Image (cartoon, rainbow, N blue to C red):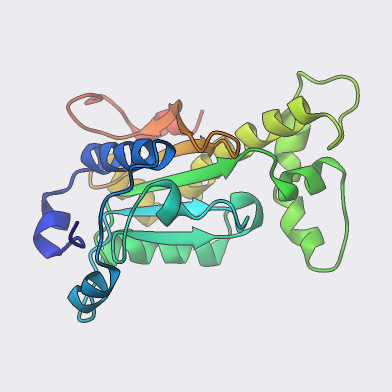
Length: 227
């Protein structure tokens, strides 16, 4: 499989980009990875890159977006930070990826059994980690289903918080970046939240935070995302 080039990126739409990732994840969980000559891809992209998607995921060693979605060199921008949270530097990176480098889709990818989410559930405070976990705390407080044992020992509570955290990150991207907001509104890019199951390898995309303006969803407006 060849690396993406200027032409293939230009022909890509946000919806097609999403389908590419879904197909890649299916290959991953089926252990049918596409054949790639990585050295050839490295040579093909030495003078430029044309990634079709940008993935915000956790630093967890088991959640490499390139592997999970079976993508090669030059195919995706991979943004990684504990707890897949959003900050100013990450927003700037996404603005570069989409506005300058032509990426068509942003995916906020959480995962099960997330250590950062567990830390936020336990209200851990430790050096600079304290500030990072504080960005997950609103998701902990927003989780209203659990009344007993609201700690990392309760796996259901942890997974509920992780899902909320993904959805909040999607909304934070739009609310904090006028550039990305306008690109979504104009149908130039899409944004979606998803969860990676560490046990099965499967990625579940959340339809309720899938914001792609196209023939399947022609009436979408960014104002919907703010509610």
